[in-house]
Image 1 (cartoon, rainbow, N blue to C red):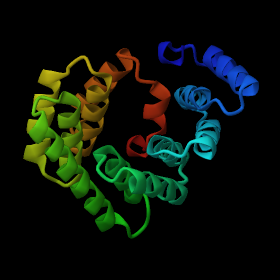
Image 2: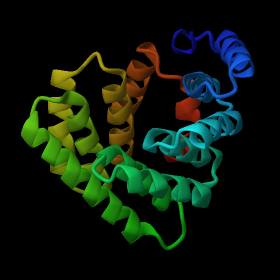
Image 3: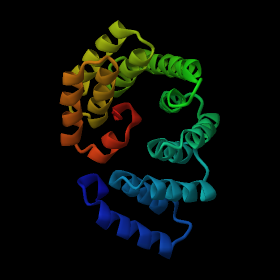
Length: 212
């Protein structure tokens, strides 16, 4: 439901399910996602904390961290993201999240770059297994942009868009990558593409990278 824009209805349903079954981890996961898509990041984090209380896992810790990040609670986001990485250190997207968080913290820029370097390394290992994975290529483009490797960013993004032009997260990552590369026209094009494919506008609006 929330994936089709019916977030209020989804929230009511998942709230009811959690009331009926207070240990229903799947319902809390869905409730967190619905709140996040609605832009209610505090309630989303609370729902994901319920997941952690019943079934600690890297995705739940990561989701708490993402919502803290969108709330501007960067130190709390760092703690949660590092907890996720402890559980799943080979997941390049978790290192990406850590880089994004550290970018927002004072005197942490080099540590942020270290996180993006690790994310890039892990993404490239994944691409050795499947070089035609469009979303992973889009992630690599983002990491390369964060590391000031413009040629890698542009080449990876071109490949990603050729392979997965209908993937919402490819367009989302393309928008962020082009913003970093200061290509605002292409960033706007892919932001619109992601929104047309279902990416919530509220998440773009909350992203610190898009802050004035």
